[in-house]
Image 1: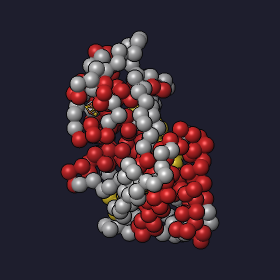
Image 2 (image 1 turned 30 degrees about the horizontal axis):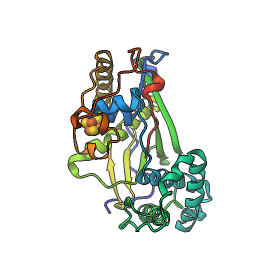
Image 3 (image 1 turned 135 degrees about the vertical axis):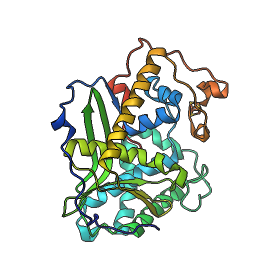
Length: 318
Ligand code: SF4
């Protein structure tokens, strides 16, 4: 465990800067929109971006992703309770209602466990393909137990949870959802994101922080304060990854997002979204359509136009 701090950092005030909207009013109508997930998709594999954002190819729900959604819902609701009642037992008791609520919204998720009668349990907090419902639910409880090893939710009040953030800059709408925002008594802002996957190896940390820098940029531009800390909480590994951004870096990051958007527009105009095979292919739902794996993409949707705001925004998935 690298970080067990539970209160917002008491370090000096975050670097302040005028919101971008004060310095240069953005254009009022977005010509496109980008979320951290879709920007990351394009960076990783332009063809994956196309399949998800332009073709809207369906993707099968997974137990791992669904467990992440349920755990996120519990960690959000936990702070609705009075501080003294935010215990592990309370959190565990919220798991089944959170699952039921999700099932009401997405009844198709019941298929995840439809074939379970004698499923073998997963291990070490991992949900394997043969894990049954009870084991799956128990592994979600394990993730919550790890959360309580990392933070004491009775000791602080988040400033925001599941906060929708967006900022329009030069016609590009940057948008996403932040799991949690903490603000210290001195005004320092901390952005927190819960991850139910594993802590990335050092070489992949930058990739993990891409989403957090995206949020930091939007908060800086809309609130005028550079977040003091970006904190990723890895529940499976019971570990955290923290990072302190600065204004110069966020300005650079903003230029990177614009470059990504320009590349998306170019690819859209030429219908040229290249496949970029990597280890991610193992978990890609669209291999059957991917030329890198002998497949053929579906016909490009007509008419060809810049990805619309609605088409290019897909909300964050835990
Ligand atoms: S299979 Fe791999 S290369 Fe093909 S679209 Fe998916 S991630 Fe990209």
